[in-house]
Length: 389
Image 1 (cartoon, rainbow, N blue to C red):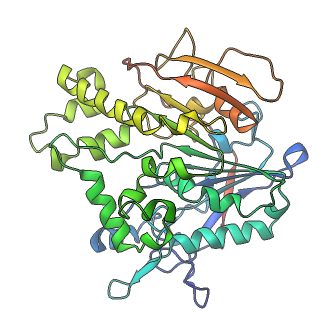
Image 2 (tube, rainbow, N blue to C red; image 1 turned 45 degrees about the vertical axis):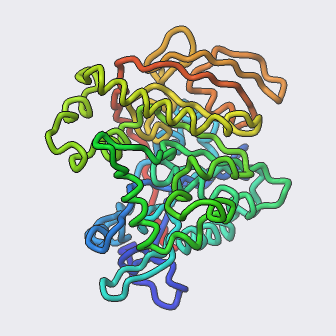
């Protein structure tokens, strides 16, 4: 669409002032009144300099966004690749604000608009006018920064619909932890502090959190998930590859480069490094302990070195997707699940993620690290055009 600059539109704009947008596949047949909204990920910007750079990319301007993109994984329109959602109305909301669709501020000197919250509202209003208001069921999902956004906006999404509409949320690789890095510092906390302060995120954080904790703490999902009222599914790797590289052992915390090989290939990790990663895993398990007791919520914490698993065909629905059971690809689990809708018990695997989204509940116990990472897979699918809001 060329990324036109918005004027007089309540500043519902990307970092550079261009219009935000989304890609949309219309649903049909049994999925005509079902909606899947995916919030795109892509990190954050926490300082003027990084945000100025970001607005010269697709993460900060619709001018640089691909006008057509393939829909894969949970967004695929092929029944054999995505049997539960292939014919739903499927939407990918593009990410161009740098604060998980949660900021609302500006910096006139740097010509930066931090309008993530307004982009979220504009996208939802536009989609409601295109038929989402008539949804029988709706799922809000997101990956990485979009996974964090799906947690932040989950209850807002629920409130768009009448009580009769079935609404759930899915956070993929969005469980960012307030963890100590390899130097004893708090790299991600310091980074998030900049995001929250610069982009005016505080006013849009849940009051249930900010009444008790500082705003930066309330940007960490581990401090939010207990108060999300809408059914929420958390899908995350216990050894999240992005967090290992950018939060636990970034170059700034590892000037000697002692973690370089371990980050790139976990088979190269020393015993002490493995223990450090296990401590991170334990932090994650502790963070979801209370959340996991709810019969409405769901979670799949696998032992992969991975980041974002619903968008990729090999980890969403393939013969060699991550498994739960006796034969495993990237983790060891003991898993018990049962249906609330009278479904028969089945051999569990990654499919239970889709099962929960269609009304199942389960109990999960998490296992241990083994040394097998996920393999990439190239999938060709039809493309969807960018629609500016």
